[in-house]
Length: 354
Image (cartoon, rainbow, N blue to C red; front, side, top):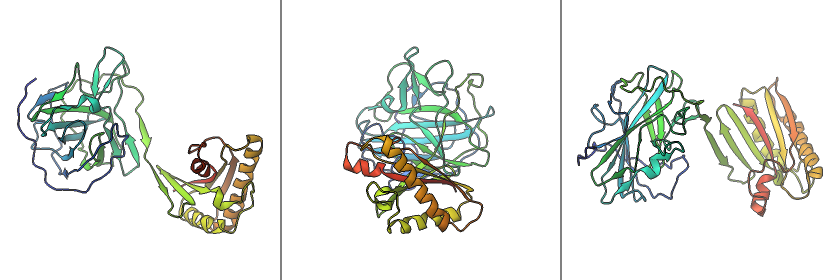
């Protein structure tokens, strides 16, 4: 490998701290600058493996960047997105350049690689995902069908970046819908790199078109919010909304008759249903693990039915049907060994399309 000490492109703008929504592999204290600019539709690379050098791509510079400081990997790592584009064979190709501008060695394989149980291959990029904010989807790297490695750069041995060294690597993903022209790139060591342009085509000099891959992994992007009053929380996944209502607010202990406090919460839910396009609303009742399900399951079903009756009164839009089910103590969302966890598990969930 060739090593040089050329610095990366200058950062253009300082941005606020954005918490990464990937699962962080270590506790990181981050300060960041994120830059983004449009680039041409074509980029190229002759390398099938990561390069340790001072340049990243034949392009004029990165299309987006992030800097992380004060991590276990090093005191200043610069992550540049050199290109993101669609390939001719229906994939998305991401090219990344990581430069160590700090004073200590950076062991990048700890975060950007994973061991395969076939041949001990180190595959880069498995911790890097793409987010389609337009459609609420997260894209994971394509996985080879013949082993446990991703369709991405790989090398044998560690990748240690000395001060001034740069590591270039690429990762292939399922192709997003044609109307998506920008994506967010998440890494385990930086804040999310937002608004990265997705080129309509990319000049790809890689021979992986005929490599068989496993079923693409694309998950709905879920956001969870808790109400300030503590009586509800909500989960938005793709085109579906689930509102979790606390049974402690809706009902007295071991009762299925709605309390006077329930009306406020259910009125808010009814307004959301009226504003949605949903024709079917699903209502599910749950309890904590106290007692047994011979009692808990009928109680949870009765509570779901009480919520259904009230929502039928409050929802003004025609053509909406309601389905109910009681699950007892199954499917807990919190630890039943704590009082706080039990309180979260005592809930009625109302789910409908947006």
